Length: 339
Ligand code: FE
Image (cartoon, rainbow, N blue to C red):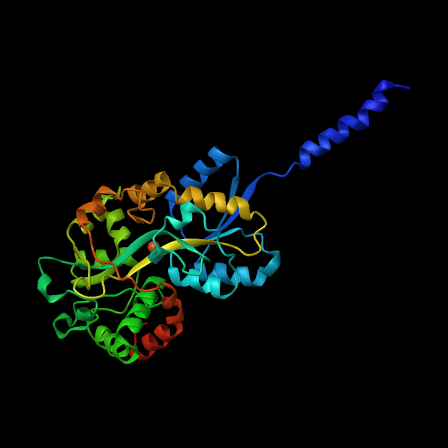
């Protein structure tokens, strides 16, 4: 018998096996759209050989997609910049309970789900920014003060369509009650210098150009603008002052961007490895230094700029409560005319 004929099927079989050897991968659905995240994913792949397939979209669109895909969803890890969307994913039954690994338990309980379905990746504070030459800082010490008479025509706010403002308003409902939150919204709206428009950066640009004197933004946007490659953005940011509201009572509203592993994740082991990597001291410091977010790993050092801004008291509300008040927040905003 011809030896070539005997060996050929063997060679073909070996070739077939090596071709079908599964590639280790992890499928990430992310509502975070930062270059820093993609740099970290690339580093993860380099270190572990696990390929990261990234799908980026708005968090609510991703949640809708996950619901439609159901058990057939290829998604392993859901990442979002808003904690209400993490609780929503969990209440929709989309997430798996996370194992109690040391690296997860290391995240302070106020920045992860008490029921164990999601964890924060970074923390950010929603702070007041103002033009120091036009605003006497003694005028504002709380979010409630933004609704005061003295700020008539001097305040601008981003739309309530922003997840960040929805979570802020939800926190005000939890703390002050529904009626007080309703009054706050109508007084706030009556102070607006213009209809809500643009993102957090646009509010800062509008203050610098004199359209208004005060607004509310996430800390990292100010940090990014202070370190922007664009000279005009640096000038805008440098002209503003920041204050942490509610330091004398409940603390400043903070939000976490975070992640959960999908209940039907085909690659859940890899998703957990990626989560561990993102929570490592070095990834956390990278995110803080490049994005100006606060680490949730207590072993990681925050960026120099954040240290300069100083220690502040953060609202310690159970972050899952924000999602529970989200629909109410939208209704109150609509009634009060906050578009
Ligand atoms: Fe953001």
